[in-house]
Length: 181
Image 1 (cartoon, rainbow, N blue to C red):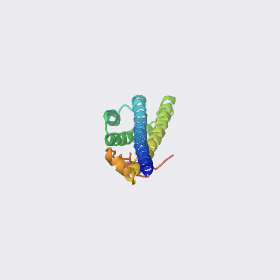
Image 2 (image 1 turned 120 degrees about the horizontal axis):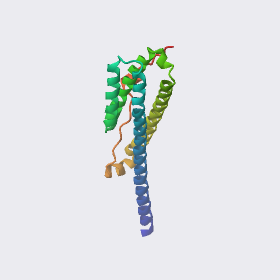
Image 3 (image 1 turned 135 degrees about the horizontal axis):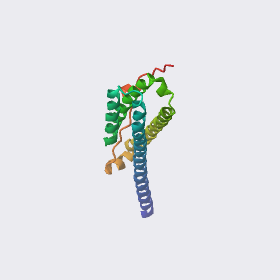
Image 4 (image 1 turned 90 degrees about the vertical axis):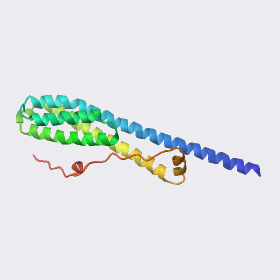
């Protein structure tokens, strides 16, 4: 009579341990994914001074554009929370759009090999940022679902596991982009 109770107890303990460990693994994946976003945003921020200097050589009178890019880059580097990083990233994206609009006015700049290389690297980094955000959001989805479903939610609440926020696009990023040749 005592054996079935012991077996059920062992099964419950094993389930409890497995559930707790799976929550820890998912939480660690989210932290790693967020770190991946940080790496790509840092790479992006490191490319920007070179890009700005290249454009400055051609467009000396566009001081406000350069100041906005520099301010947005500084905001991105100093951001600490997820929402601050998202806001700074969006601010930088807008400033870079202005910088590329200025570049469009200078055909000799567009033909510069240095500018083309920097633009290509920045585009590559933008793709990596997008992938990193997608990877982060996928892990957040898995974790948040697990934290909310029964019976895992009981264990999650016992140990204070909370849902994470998704890395979301702003209204500006959702707007249709017009490509002109």
